[in-house]
Length: 296
Image (cartoon, rainbow, N blue to C red; front, side, top):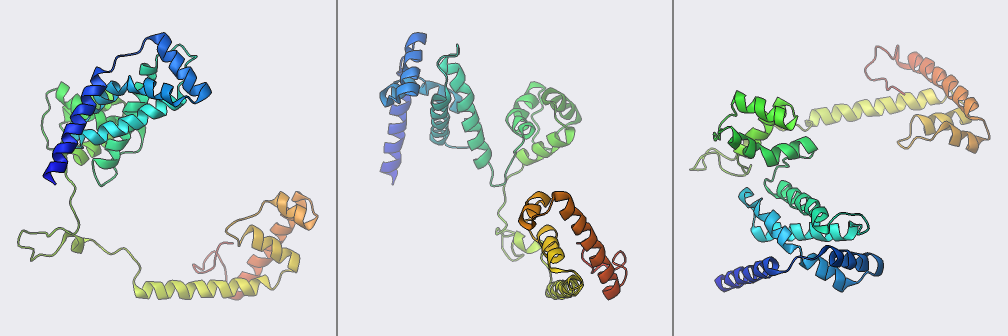
């Protein structure tokens, strides 16, 4: 096992050495390789193009090593970004591949860090991502090295610099200063107090709630079935497809099926709804006052 780890470390070191020693490409050579890959799917051209810029991946990955993730994984994700850049690069635009690839490399590594830094999803919006990757840097700019609650000075400064709300800054600061905790971990060292899972409230319905909900559902179903008996077959079809189906159908499509205009279907639907409401009032009373009467 130890031998395997040593071999892996040696292989990584050799890879980094080769990556950093690969010569950069001249603009015309770079463009030629990119054109060959785009137009001819020349895999050798793709290899030559990307190999010259793996150093960008290594350099970018090193900027994220402080997030506690393996350098080899960061490089691997950066390589994914490099390949995405190669697949989308337009060599006919007057932009160097290295400039274009940097954005894709950084984006791939950042997404990997966000997915793996914590078992709890950290941020999904652009503002949250910006906060995650800039919070510590901005705190350092004003010499705020506290890991406790963020100071008001830091709060105001960071919110202004990143154009985000102070609430978002407070939330992200709290997330980054806390560590993940397993819900199955014991609450005390001796383990006699149970697990943290035991303190969570069960939000699911009780057996009594489940029974009452099912009872109410059956009553509503019986009332609607009885009320529908006052409609003719065409009205029942329209109400079922327009009001009682999860995948409702449009008036226009329903009109085509019935050989009617869209406006005529709408008129029949409105008339049928009035009949239904009148029938429901006769069965259970005023539907506006009965909590069990469904809104059709």
